[in-house]
Length: 170
Image (cartoon, rainbow, N blue to C red; front, side, top):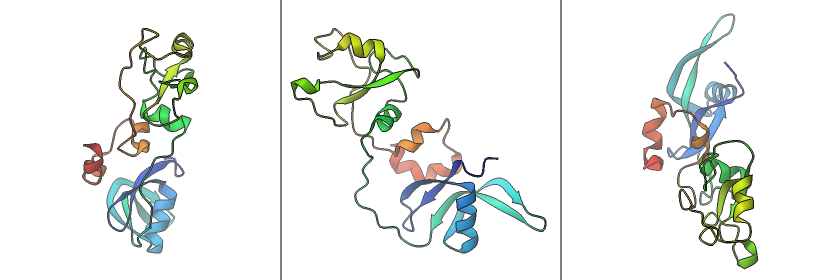
């Protein structure tokens, strides 16, 4: 069990999803009284005299003030949003780049609606043209992500997280 891996869902005092934290951090927050465990993972940490349940979902007891939730626009998040898949040919993983659908030389902006993941061969083939001019089609139109991008890194969403993520997954 990797105690430093982000495996615990963290909710604000008002049950708003904040993100993930490590097992170590979540146990410390619960033991110090800064958070309460809403669901347990079924695993335990053992000390010589105690068995400590590992939480799966925690809720902070104090409200963390955040501005409007905006996912930062960067290469890593564009690749996460597109599930590490070239949006032109469907190739997964490997050496992916970020492509401007409408090239910057033609006024294309660096925005969620204009950036897609592309493999190097497709990016070179498209060049300084629009997909239509290059005879290429996008698998999905680019958009700003609705759900937190940390969810795209998970192979499977744990069942005990689903009640708290329902609104985000619709």
